[in-house]
Structure formats: C-alpha cells, structure tokens
Image 1 (cartoon, one colour):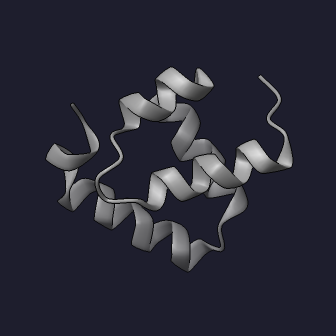
Image 2 (cartoon, one colour):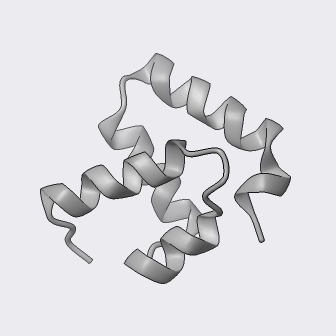
Length: 65
C-alpha cells in the first residue's frame, strides 16, 4: 500500500505516541507491526529509530491491545 505524505506523517506520529496501540495503526492503515518497523527505519534517522524501538520494547503492553 502506497501512503500519501500526510498518511506517512500520521503513521509516524501514531507510532511515536506511547498510548496508540500498533493495532490501531494496522486497522487504520492496513500495516502490520513489521511494516511499521520498516517504515520507521526508512524514515527516521538511525538514532531516532533506535530510541523509538527502545520505547516500543519497554512499553510493549501499551503498544498492543
């Protein structure tokens, strides 16, 4: 699925939000968790991606329903 620039920005914003579950992104944009990880890796600088991954792993209960 090709995302518009606005959709891409929204996915990144939702992924950074601590309380937005990855299932909400999957439902709204038809992206799996692996797709979100690939998207974030491609569109964030390396240090920001690493920081995001640590937050997701640390707060896994919040990022999943």
